[in-house]
Image (cartoon, rainbow, N blue to C red; front, side, top):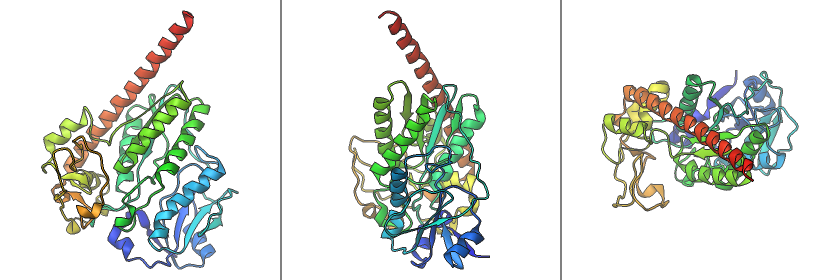
Amino acid sequence: MPEIIRFEELTWPEVAALPRDLPLVLPLGEGYAPAAIAAALGAEAFALLPALPYGWAGSAVSVEPDLLRRVVAGIFSGPAEDGFSRLIAVHSGTEALAAPGIEHLRLDRAARAEAGIDASPQRVILIPCGHTEQHGYHLPLNTDTVIIDAIARGVVAAIPEEAAMLPTLPYGVSTHRASFAGTFNMGGRVFEDFLLAVVAALVERGADRLYLISGHGGNVSFLVNVVKYAGERHPGIFAATAWLHTSGYLAAPILVRYRRSGRGGMGHACELETSYMLHLRPELCRMDRVVDETDFISTPNYYMDWIEGGDLIANPPWTDDTRTGSYGAGSLATAENGARWLEAAIAEKIGHVREIHEQQTRRLARRAQQQLHR
C-alpha cells in the first residue's frame, strides 16, 4: 500500500520538513482509491490535500470551468510558493483544468453520487467556510475547518426543517501565507468570485435565504463583500454573514464566563481553538508542543483577541508578534470548555438562522403589500 500523508492533519513544522518533490494531490470530491492514485503517479508516497467539496461538474453546486480553473490554481498557489514541485488535481470529469505547473489525473471515483441540497425558501442554506493553514506547533492545519463544520452540522441536526448546509469549504484566504509553511491562500478575489457563483447557482435553484459562516478570520472581510454583492445581484434574497463563531450575543458571554486566559489569550491556535480541538479531535492535538504567545503589540484601539476590539483595522506581518504561529494561551485549553463553547456557538447560529427566516418573511410580506398599493 502507498504511504498516504494526510496533509491537513499535520502541523506547520511537519509540513516544513516534507520533501519538496512529494506529490500533493487535490481531489475534486471524495472516493478516489489511494492505490489508483499512487499507481497513476508512479509514487510510493503522496500527500492527500482536503478535497474540494463542490464547484466541479456533478457536485452539489457546480461553477463554470474557467472559474473552477482559477479556484484550483489559487488553492495550489501556496504549496507552489512553499517549493512543492508536484501538484496534482484528481477528478473524474472532463473539466478543462489545465494550468501551468499543475498535473491532472482523471480517475474513476468509488462514490459518484453526491449529496444534494434542498435549495428552497423553507431552509436557510448554510455555507460554512473553513481553511487549511498553520495553527502553531500543536494544532493541525485543518483546525478552522473542523470547528466550523462541527458548528454547521450541529445547527442542521438541531433544526433540519429550518436549515441545510453545503459541505464545508476547506480553503479560504490567508494574507499572511508566506510566514509559516502549510498555509494556503485561494486569493481574495477568487474566493469571492467562487462563492458568488455558488450563491447564484443556489438562487437559480430556488434558495432565497443564505448564511455564510466562517471558522477562519481571514475569510471574514471577503465574506462581507460576497453578501453585499449577492444582495445587489439578487435583490429577492436575504444573504448574511457574521464575525467569527462563538463571538456574538449568546456565545460571547459564555466564552467570557469560562475562559481561563486574559485578553490576548484567544486569537489563533489559542485557548478557544485548542479547547474546541481537544473536544472534537483530541488525537490531532500535540499538547506537549504548545507554546503560549500573548505578546501582541497592543494599543488601545488595536489588539488581538477572539472578540477583537478597537477602531483600527490593519494587517501587519504576523512575525512581528509570533515566532511559532500562535496567538494566545493554548496551554489553558480544556476539552470541557470546548464542548461548552461548541454548544453555545450552535445555539447562537440557530438564533441567526431563525432571524434570517424572520427577516426574509417580513420583507417578502412588505414587498407584497407595497405591490398591492401600486
